[in-house]
Length: 467
Figure 1 (spheres, helix red, strand yellow):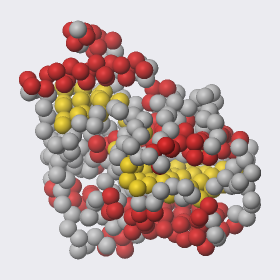
Figure 2: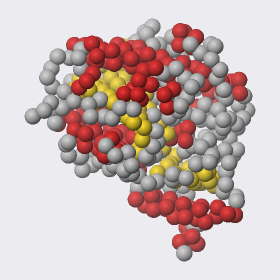
Figure 3: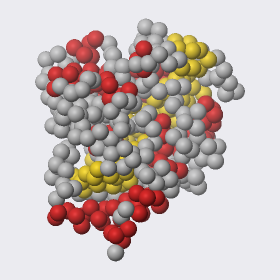
Figure 4: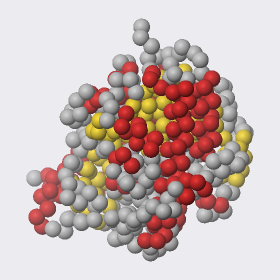
């Protein structure tokens, strides 16, 4: 039997879709990610469905690891049911050595089920990048050493509990995680294929990085976003959450440009460290036998639409980078079909020619590698908590705000990719809105969306459209 390829899955934190130079952003410096794009296949319209809590990365990561849709994970994804087989479990079952490094924002039991080994494990959401509390791998799954902290970056005095065996004192989280991965790759000499899951904590704030990476942008022109706004056009219930108070109201172009510069510098630092991992793969002769996946767990606004965080369903918050390279992956291919990150799981199964577990709901896009015209998802369902629902087609995006605000937006993304011209009040688009609302209702039922804004009453308001 032919040996299966190794798998290196790199997941970044808060990296939105337009932060790779080779995919059109001339302001950012990402030579390593550019090389992955050039040597592999980039999915330019990869999305998450949104999130059910302000920490969008929790459900996002639960969906990635289970291949399940947003309302078919357990609550917000903080705990993953044992009824759902995770990627790591599937790969272990077919003979992979699974190794986990970095952020795990879900429960400990799901980590234990996923990995054979690991190190530098962070059971949390965010931290000071220069002093992260991490755990060594425990084969028995006992992560019982808990410390209490009152971190200043939460903008509150609340104390949180963290599982911790050691600290990365004086070393940036991105470098610390990279060093751990390189040590594993360098010393791994088994014939057993490996699945290495690398979950960085960057470019999530606090936006700090080694000085040389911020210096890279000292002479570069960073412009404010084309959809920059001083404030969001209306309050829909997130104005005072932690992400949104990272910059004062009203937003200013100068403050936003500073945030973007620091964000880009963190990504350039990430880029450099990913390059070190690729170099280790190359030196050990493993790179040609390794499928590499690069993805971001969700996007980030940073001044777009007057927002700072990812608690919306605008493109900047739900659209993410996704690149595959490796054996049998086409080089230099860009695919613009819709895919979700939760589709990665069944896609990997198809690439490995193994059966997709019955608990997985994602749709494999493996066929797109040989035929990019194949479409698996015509439209996308998007959601945030019980405040927003939306549908994204190739041409339009309909956004419905309910519960806190009572507002509708319609954007023509073919002609308005930055979502600045709301068409919802124009009479000539009434039929478009009516048709999209019916599609939205179908998704709501198919996805088992019981958190829908204002519950059943919201949909009863649109009964007149059914005819």
